[in-house]
Image 1 (cartoon, rainbow, N blue to C red):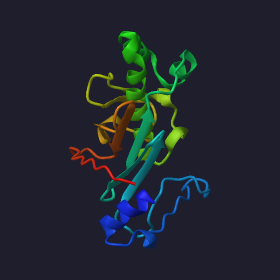
Image 2: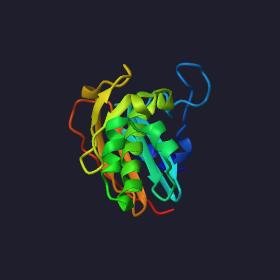
Image 3: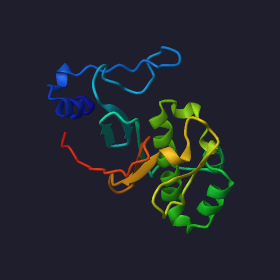
Length: 183
């Protein structure tokens, strides 16, 4: 309902009048990014734990990821998600900061992949992101769907024990506004 409320506000429609289409452009199954046919908006939705996020642009492809940092991470998940340089940067962090650092990488990668509309069909390790203490940037990509010079990322503030990142396929500077809604 939050996504319909946000989209409705942007389009001047009542939330119940908003209709989403999630048809995958590759296979036709209903697992693609949410769209409002004919509307000049692009959306991305993410949820984790007690957080739900909706990112909206005026049409530029957008990806959003929010994750609870309370989730346990192990060596197999780190190996699945991070390249060699990222793993070394994560290992250099104090042990009590590694979980948060891992989710800084994870949310940046997932937001970028979602912005392409291909999601997890892009291998996580094909992307190299800036270190957790730096502003999020795509440093390198071996996937042609995601050139590093055509995406902008921003960290979000989803609250304690959460990480969030938004990605927009653009070369323009991002102007991000965060807003909280009460249920």
